[in-house]
Length: 541
Image (cartoon, rainbow, N blue to C red; front, side, top):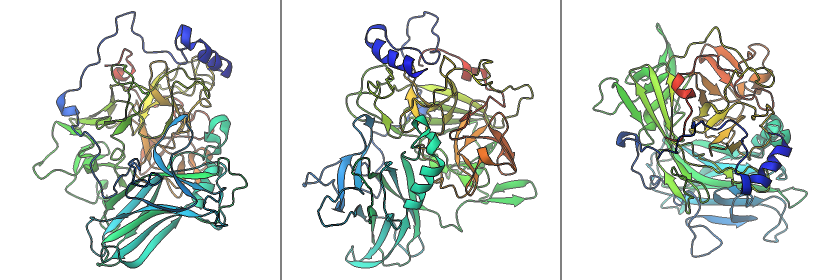
């Protein structure tokens, strides 16, 4: 939809209803049906996320000091805030101000963190500290002065025992350079929520507490406007030691998992069985409860869905029946998987983004008149997809309908991929929120381009092949932008992408890559054959 039409959509919304930017699901004039409830085996009974070692991980609960969140400490030029602008559904977190000397000490520096206890102790144990961060375009520091830090303590936090640190500013600068074209109007694509990670080993048996923090120093922003770095969603996870982590090894029968106890589910999928499971069941259901047992083999073994199966409905969004949500509601079964007979993967998704989004309807920015609604859809993927020799790719405006309007795939958080165009045949990729999504007239939030905010099985830092980020409806995997250190798939001449945005290699077979700033952005067409059930239209079920 052109900007002129988007503006018209905003002006006409009150009297005429939403303007269609992609063909809505056809109902054929039939009365709207009540959405069906999922069967019990596809539901999860959690009322809230399971407790972890980090307390108040959403950084939402207030301490007796109204300026500091419960269980956290802050110092320097840092504030506890609802992150980013008022026009976004965001998390509470910390704003690190590189352009403002809040405490008037003559420097721009500060940190925020939490002391964590209760984790299994012992020298040699490995952990991963992650948080979600966003560097506004004006954020700047000198001397690589943005970092995440883990300090080790013994004797219940009284005895300091060294620590580990990771510099983050080089990653910020890399994203600003290499993802710039992924942003609105092909600018500021690096100003997006990303996951940052620090893997570390406990060096001493005496360690019984950790201080997890994010901080900065040498703030050098030339303005106090859009000069913040936001940090939210602190998480501490136990991880295997590198030498013990599941790997892919060469065998006489080809690549295989290093752990012989894993049960093959079909295609590239494996499962670490519960004690009572001796063989692959006819149907295996994977939810947030057992997702960490699931592995995908593509040169390494990873868990692409493990951190992506739950979400939150936020006030102003719509629930499954179309009612406005008035308070945060945890959705424990946003994504549920069924592996059937070693041949098919059925993905059930409520299509709720598990990352910050703009607030829709958007009356001021993109003028998108639609809402984000909880849906309930199922997608059917072959576990061993095959290329279709008769497949066609889109022409410059998809006038040949090589890809349908509406869903062409989905990310590992269950949110839909769409083709690059609106119904006018115009590029739709500029009218997105900061996480590269917006809702369609049927209130389905979706991506037209690389969704940087999606949490991947390992953090994509551009130092090797990107992780898997989703699947096309033909069953082939979709990967992030990189194929090697510093090399994006769109720029690789040794093994270039074809017109489908596809390439093949020994580890992954045929697979798609997203191409930031370059058409077709996600898919150029279905290289395989989607199941007919995926292309069916109709009201929410």
